[in-house]
Length: 462
Image (cartoon, rainbow, N blue to C red; front, side, top):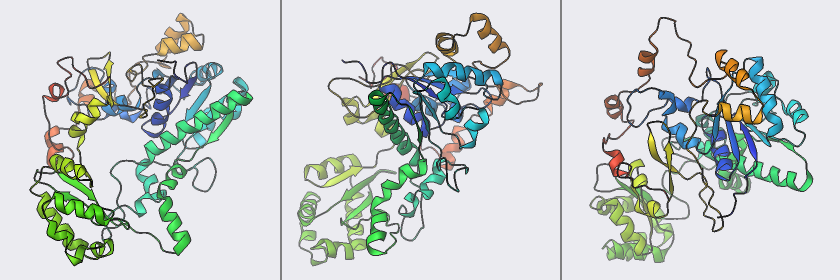
């Protein structure tokens, strides 16, 4: 395989949680040397979310599955950015780096004294990207932003949900991965510009603005007709029937979307109800839309007796667009995804062992294989490698930084001096039986490692 396109490019990554890490994960998969910076007293919150075993062990903060999913392929260092020596270390790293990426609100980097104007003095062709929630200018620029707020602010929530239920979130912070992908594309364009001109540049990217094009049809509808689109649930203005129908399992569902009369006829034949095809109430897409409630009841009478996977294959083979609603377990065990090596198997040096991680860069290239070359870093794992290798920190200076907790490998928690740290950390674990009772999780399967083939040495990756 050929070299990866970003080999030799170094990225200083101040981002946390999802949007920024999604961006820098793509750059790492393309071969960039990405240095994730976090503070021991202000660590990435994805460190502390639920682990698969939900048991307290040493270094709980290095086990969070979300952290591992969003940070593969990176190096990890810790720096106290509230201490002048932490800021000085950033300035010593910048000359060795090509790109700086941050996702704070606009005032934060300025408070650190790390604006683009300051950093460009250290590296004239530096590319810096700020990917804040609302951009660096404008009346909302200093507002806090997370995905659950940016979904409505970007208009997405105005068209999701049922007509009689009001706006509904998508269930994930949809704007985060969108911003991550857009951010990676912006950095690649800036690198291309630098290759051609020798010029670095500053990129102001608003996460709100990256999501707005995803409701482009709604924007256009208002511009062309004056109508404000509203939520339609599972229905469509161009397909009928279209819906999500319950199958025979406890919580199994099948989505069906039929866009023309020929497909409708194929559907009727496939489900053994040829008489629906000849029913005048369903003869055209307009008629099917008019009688959609009747159709939904008839279709669900059929799907309730069907396995959602078998019905998916039956309808697809008949030329009908259908798909099962897969849950997390079904996604991990899906034979199609496993055959296509969708999951990278990353072996973490802690006791976590190998874990399947969804590919960061989805596209397959026949001349290169962009994917992370390592699992997500443990906290401060690469302090010595990065600070000594790129910032010229000596052994003595490194030891002094550790002694003064400018750097380190464990969180610094604000707890009373007589508190039991182990007991406090153990309290972070959520009881699984309570989560099942609340419906946060559907089931616990202690043999999940065997089902994934992790105990037998088999793997889901390439």
